[in-house]
Length: 470
Image (cartoon, rainbow, N blue to C red; front, side, top):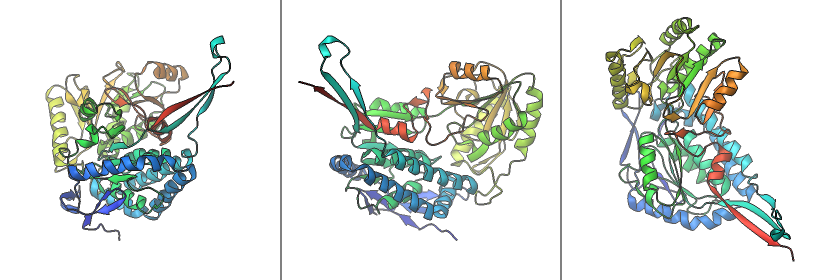
């Protein structure tokens, strides 16, 4: 049987360090302390940044095959430790075990993609003789590592969203310091344990540093860091950008994702995918389905199907394989969303199913006709809540991804043109993501793109070469 250790270290300049056990991490289902880990102080964070600065040049000099071999080592070790990683995720995040196993698979996919892309960091030869004054000149450019990077990852996908920062950094040769979410730090710590096995990485290539929000200001403000990549809430992300100074900033923030069910959609298929997209991981996904916009001609039929299906979802212990709805990340978050549901009902919304709260367990909830002014409609729910409505405008302040169920190619192309979002998914939900595709949002939902190749571009700079042939 898989078990967790009582204490875990942080990783400072490639080495395991246990200066304290100040961070208690709970089992999100039982609420009891599951393990403790070291908490980085500002002095430790400063030392890690200094190590990353020293490692920048040797990291940049690593050959493509060396970076690839590090990533392939991680792939092999993650496969060997598959059950341990899934169990740890189930405990620290409260994620149902089947979904936990799915995230470990995506972790492996992300590092595998990065291993391939590490040998494809191409440049270009560019003709410069576009006018008589440039005759005899030619140009070339290549991508070079941007330098020491700062990463802040969230609690909801603590393995794969950390991987989407760590793997591209290794692929291009950028040293990094990472702050995993304090609620779910163990996945990143295990990644640090695996990276520490790679002697080819120079000292200072990586640091994994659980830290309090108050003590982690250096991740954002320190000018020695050349890039900040943050995944989390819009309020925090935009505040960090305002303090980041001259460094490049990549933000992957929240959404209020919509799916559109057109009159010609396959309703059975749409139902299966929408229920999954709205309620898997207790709805704690930035591209989880929150708004379900259905054509009036099929609205009543789909509403009946949706409510009936939602009521069949099994809630309970995330270690049980039949469980689909586990706990939210904390009772505080569950109470916050329960308050939003009650506010919406008081304002005139109809509660079609769910809405009951016990501890951190909130039932899968479907509301109908939520007034626009209510938080449940205009803000990111980040929990097991979906709002049902008939066709309305598709725009809003968030712009991460949207799904559209239709067989009409003209509707597909119109949605791709008109929807002001980072991506449109056809005949699947907004929460669908493959780890090599460009992923990110517009408007309040962020800056830049994830997906290994696209993150690699953010972590590099173009260096030009001009040659005059004389």
